[in-house]
Length: 250
Image 1 (cartoon, one colour):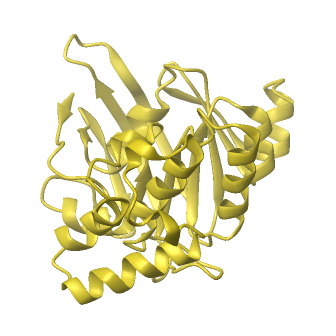
Image 2 (cartoon, rainbow, N blue to C red):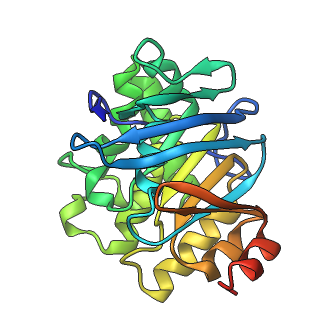
């Protein structure tokens, strides 16, 4: 298993929020990823995601959900198989293009919030892709306003609540206007109020999205399709209600 942690993926949305430009279907074919000791993190995973789909990737801790997400954005490189985003292969020659198309919100917001001010955390992506400071300011202010978080711009993430950190981490992805959004256990560490706020934000997003979770109730509430991952392999895939009932999650 190879690790290409050379840059942070960036991203953004729709409704009254900023939005991406067109569809970004995803095709994963025969994806296998192994750890350095030879253990398979993912085993022959094949998934097609159509534009506009709202997908839940459900499985227990260690099922391979995070490994799949890291592979989709090119942080982990596969031992076998291919990943295509639109018509762009996910490989070392196309990482910048891929990371314009996909935005990953990590499970722990602290993995995405590392600058002295929230403004700079959100500006990191646009600056990294060469936007002028005027363009950066416009993008950052727009996404913070859209998420109702403009008052957090000058704050440090060290002073924020878990819910505030989650919103800012989402903003740091949405600011780059990705076509496909990946959320890794997005309600982890959140209280009921913060979860409700996340659900409100999610309802305003128009992009294709995949939410990794071990929570069947969340999967049922936010997805029209559920993919079940067990031991690094896809074991079920279909309409949310049918899969959840079949798997006895709901």
